[in-house]
Figure 1 (tube, rainbow, N blue to C red):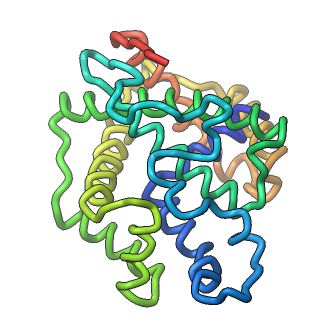
Figure 2: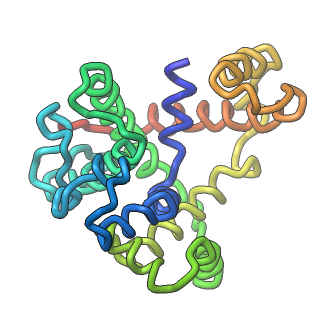
Amino acid sequence: MKRVDKKAFLAIPLSTMLVLAACGGENTNDAENDPNNTNETTENAPEEGENNNETAMDEEGAVDADPDEPIAIVNGEEIPMEELQMQMSQYEMLFAQQGMDPEDEENAAMIQELQQDILDLLVNQELLSQEADAQNIEVSDEEVEEELDQMREQFEEEEEFEQALEMQNYTLEQLEDDIRQMKRVQELQTMAHLDEDQYTVSEDEAREYYEEIVMSNPEIGEFEDIQEDIENELKLDLYLDDLREQAEIEILI
């Protein structure tokens, strides 16, 4: 259960969280303009300035360090603390919108686990980025712009889109870079890049994973309908395991 829930939570890309937060945060914007608004989401949201590479989770030892300091080195490439801080900042906003109290003992333990999971995710992303470089995978400006347009469609006005970026301390250039990287990794992760003989998943393994998923998401559908997707995901896990085993990884926190 814990593995499935974590993967579902961590699967949200930063760019997607921008849209989710902004769409869910429309009431928050209204509340800022309406002093009589007592929306619970606003009451639980971080105060101004708290979302700038610093979160309310600092007391739990989560993210309280120099953003330029490396948190890991992957094949000689440093991953700066800033990347972990930005990710945790985004999740903190989602926690606030859901009314979660980071001071609660159970939530605090989950947050610490989440920090470690995000660190693992950042290492995986760096490995995949390096592999995409090795495979000479490129993404055109047109592909990036198409993805951006789909995100903009979630907003009624361009100004709302820009406000959402600002709320997240996020620039358009950063978002474009994230989209480009995301699409490079998606291309790398297509089954065309995996050796079918090297990475095999049995039906029993896929069904066991399905049983875990369906416990937390009963509406996911019948096993036969998503069997191929599950097998592909498990193969990708094996692929990442191989990349990690072949890499030189130093964790610094």
